[in-house]
Image (tube, rainbow, N blue to C red):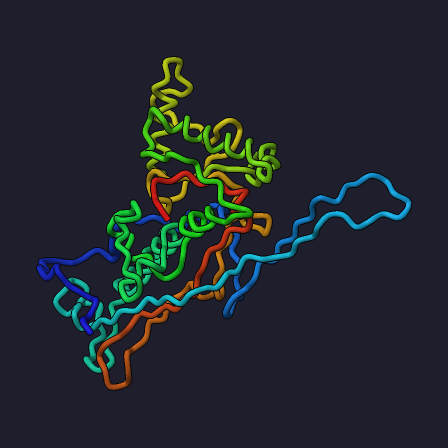
Length: 340
C-alpha cells in the first residue's frame, strides 16, 4: 500500500513557523445548520413509523358502521459502512523543516507535534466535507465495484463518483417520485438556475405545495421550524443578484441578500449541487422530513496508531455508518436538473 504522506517542500533554508496553513473546505452545514434530524444508535437498521387517519366522518346513525382507515407503515434507515484509512511514515519529516521537532531516537520516532495536530485537524475537516456532500449526492449505483454508473449520465459532475456508500436525499427523493400513493413533489421542466429565473422556479415550488392536497398544510408554517428553502451557496448568489439588479432594487449593491422568500426561510448548505434546491420542513428534531441515520455520534473521531509493533509506519482510521431517509415524500419538494 502506498504511503499517504508526501513531503514536497524539502528546501529547509531556515526556521519554520510553529503552525501549518490549511486550505479552506466546506463544513457539515446540513447538520450544523439544523437542516436534518440525526438519528443515532442504529446498529443495523431502524424503521421510522408513520401513521395516517382518513375518511372517518359520516352522518349520525343510532348504530353506526365503521368508516375510515388508519394506516400504519414506515420508512427505513439502514446505515451503510464506510471507512477512512491511510498510512504514513513519520520519518519522512526528516527532510522537512519540522525535523527539529522529531524525537532524538530513531526507534519509536513519531510525527512532529505540529505536523500531527494539523494533519488530524485537516483530515477531520475533509471528513466533514465528505459527509456534507454525501448526505445529498451519494448514490450506491456509482459504486465502481457495483453498478458503476457514470454520474454524468445523471446530470452530476464526474467527481460525484466518490459518493457511493449509501443513497443520499436527492436519490431517495427522485426514486420516491414514482411512488403511486405518496410521490415526491418534483418541480417539472427543471433547467439550470439563473439570475433571471431563480425566483420563478422558487415560486413554482411553492405553487406545487399549494396545489397538492397532502402538502397544503405546510403553507402556513413559517420560521426556523417551518417550511424552508434549502439551496447551494452558488444558487443563493444568483438569488441575491436577482434582488440587487431589480429595476426597483430591494438591496444595496454591497448588502447580503435576504434569507427569506415570500416569508419562508432560505438556508444555504454546501453539499447541495448547483441547480438543485429543496422546499420542505427540515430541522434537527423528529418533526423534520429529512433524516440522517448513523451508528453513533461518537464515531466522528479518528484513530492514530502505529501500524504494528515491528513497523515504523503509522495509520489514521475512522469507521462510520450512514444513511438518509425522507419521512413523507409527498410533503417534500425538490427542484433539480439531476435525474433518477
